[in-house]
Image (tube, rainbow, N blue to C red):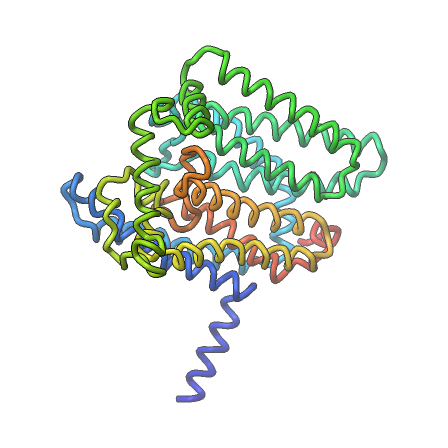
Length: 403
């Protein structure tokens, strides 16, 4: 029996590679996701005339598939992965442009925002693909800038990179301003830590400030068409805290989320909340299984449950930083930081909205909110980070020569 246990243990260790703490974070988030989705989909099941188990089973399939994706990506030979990511990163960005344009023109629309497209029966949010694609591309370009043979080439590479960042974020913005701002901020942070000349960074910050002013002028003084009116109302309500500065539906969302958070607070329910499956606001809060799932987690699992979920994302980020420090070349270093930073910032946006710290944004909680293809895209990001925790010491020059 002992020999069998040792055999299973050694086989498991051979198959599951990478940082074990990051694996533990993924498992923890998956467990939280299954529990929260099962609880939060009761009203949805009632409205659709189905069973909560249907949504749990469907979500569970994607979570299991997500772990399979992580396992596949982390098993790829490091040299091969780095080589092909370098080759494919520009094409991923090129492919993002027609995808985003198609989404704007013919995508599924909700609240005047076209964010989803359907391919072969699968519906997915285009930005879920674009986020990792752009982060990988920026990481590649930062490595190219560092290794540029002369000043002219370095500056050329830099402004090409900025051009593509601007194009992608501009195409995301009409349907999803928060995602565009978040993705641009991540790219800006990567550039800041990517050993780019401070002169270029300062010029970029100036252009960013000018673009930000133009966007605000558009929102407040431009034609109130499409999503512009929604952006203005959200900002006004958040700044003034005036319920009349926003539409009733989104007032209702924000208020119910706050009620869920208060319901799980130390004063009302103690440190452990109302208990699993005992949420009250899940019956009236819109999208409790996606945009506002963190409010349900706090209501049912209390302050400590919400803190543990937040701690999991910070743990992922700091383990990624630890991995990045050990990387011997810039591309994997920037990529692992960018991917982990993307998940952390998105999680903080989602948590902040639930707590009333940010305006309503529509950002989901990575690997926790109910989803299909979004779970798989986050799993790819997890898998890439895990792969770099194994292979981050491979020099990029060696990787380019890999067969």
